[in-house]
Image (tube, rainbow, N blue to C red; front, side, top):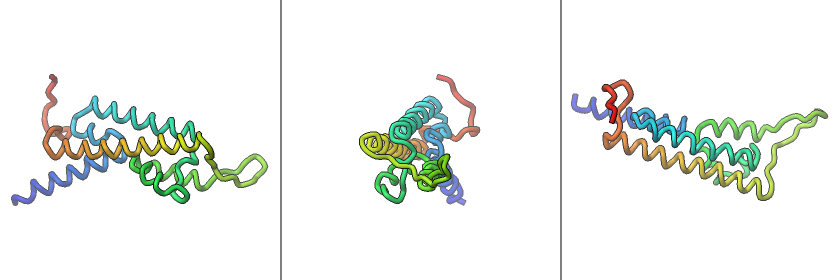
Length: 148
């Protein structure tokens, strides 16, 4: 019987971590740190989007740039879908299959921005799980909200 609260707490921590990975700031939102969640979401999403804008979608490449991809995938599982699109390429107006490419300085900058976004999200995941572990936040719907 004493293990039941421990198991529930472990499942709660796991839920916080997974939600924080799926949606940047989602873990903080789950523990009622709403302002922090919004700041994290906007910061990480904009950083990742700027990286894609500067370097193109080709900066996400799990085959040719594995170390960068490991950092990028920390941003969200959506990066895996972007990687799939990036590697599959597109068909141009002449019917030729063309692969996405990112070369030179814009590609490097885009890779750096998207990787930094992923590593920032990794830090926010750890922060959310730690805050939930120490009891700083509470699960949404468990108690009445207090306004300070």
